[in-house]
Image (cartoon, rainbow, N blue to C red; front, side, top):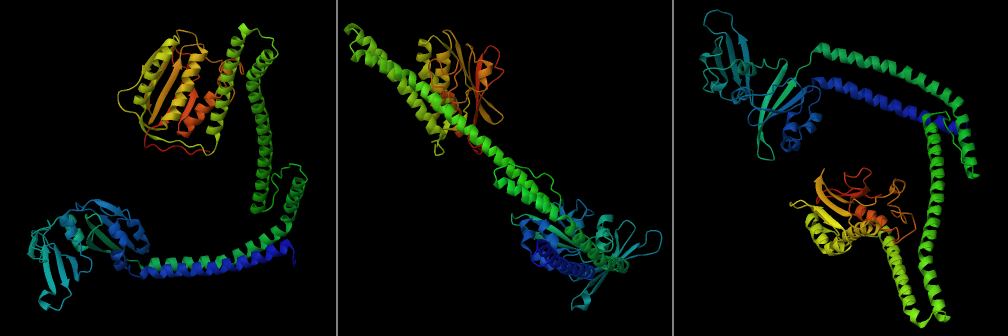
Length: 528
């Protein structure tokens, strides 16, 4: 097996096995240490001094609690803010909290039930204070059945307690645990109370956990060795065939034939290589199809540009040849020159449109945006266009809210958007058509509807209307370059918005464009 792929994999797997055995031994030591730690007291001093306590990140303290520790934090009113276990009380009164021994205190209380009847003592509490003063070493207090002080006291001046206070004072609220109280102030200056609770473990629980750990240890080694032997046998039988299949696929790919491996079998890693190879083949096929599509689009773009430029250039060249050849009477020359001038202006408009389209499609095209009240901007724009619309025989209906609609706009580029939409409506509709401009705020966006009740756009062309060189009527005929809406869409997208042709316009309208722009402060979607 020396030098072969199987030998390499087998040697590495055996090394991996030894590593796992080492890890297993380390895990066993950790497990055994975990059992041993059942008798370890919780390091409450580390909990008290940890910055997470003042920062309010209490969950971070759970790593210090171990198996026997529990932590609860209450606010200044005694309401539970956090508990590492579910059996802490949700509320504590100040009196109840005062009955819990303070952290670091040398005072310990023993409680005893006193047999008797009538109104005599029922409960006896003995306070031990570990100090050098013998007179303060022990204090005794007796309570009746209603937890009222019959004689003695703990030095706190109280004459009675509630049942809950007695349960906390005597330690019976949390049986099998020792609970201490720590008052502290968090980073925000709020008063907080932390309860440190340490549970005791019985000998039976300790030995049960110890026995379970040994059973795991005794079973792990033979099962692991059996799994290793089975894996090596399976590897020697299965690894050769899928690797050969993968190699054949790679060889076919180098010869220019796109193939798929499918489920080549073998280990999970080899199957993943096969799946990755299939994804690579699919991406390669998609890339080839995209390249062909771009080539076709580039050829169509060149053809459309050539068509748009050819007509005015042909007319200009024909008229100039006629004038130069003396075929045009002197009295007709001015008419020919006017025609040449008109075609030259058309040619200039086309070149400008191509130039604008190339600018907005360039990756380095950027906007100069500033905070703008879209409603006020529309009022000023439409006021400036009113005479043009009126002279063209059209009517304006405007609905703009009085409240501000703040957006981040490049005013010059957005004016170009409105110019394109307005000029399209004026160019392709009859006299008397009504133009609609409606602005509203919906779903956190500014929504502008630009519509008319004119001739409309044919359904078969509506889905391509934002593509370059597509116009609302028969493509490549009439005035217009067919680039206006493509430019408009790009500018709106650079603003972080969207534009669409509503397939179901509002009643009474035939064509309706819907522009959505993010309000100021809204996150723009990333461009892809």
